[in-house]
Image 1 (cartoon, rainbow, N blue to C red):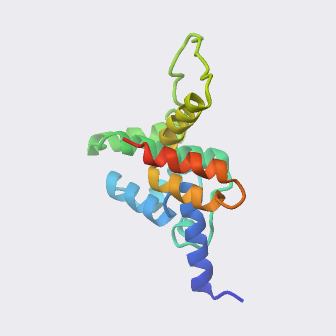
Image 2 (image 1 turned 90 degrees about the vertical axis):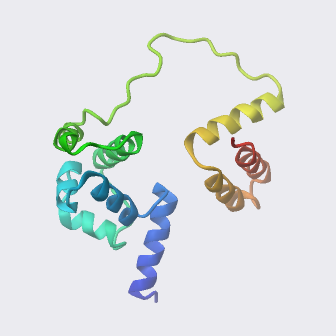
Length: 166
């Protein structure tokens, strides 16, 4: 039977897989960036401070409520875009609470015709570009290692996408 420390370590590893970081790292970064407490963040996300504490401490792995996760992601995205001035914090948190920051406007308002890649090389290049747009080269390499045995062609594509990163 796994010890409590082993369960916490496994939970944090799973958080890294799911979110790219542990909740301790995510929440710690938001607390520092915004100058607020975990309790304020919990209220902003729409969860109890106890639940957020369990996530931060690795007692729980993930957020089950999609709306709460959406608000967390919105706040992370906003804090990653540019530093938040102290006079902006209250309005930003209120906006996230209301759900105003959770949806990105469509990048293009009108339909656009896109030429589909026709050769295998063009398709691989397009796939690599799409993969690099959603994650980092180290995570692509890690995904490739995970898939190498069962899906070698996908693992090769992931490694190529990581290697072609600017």
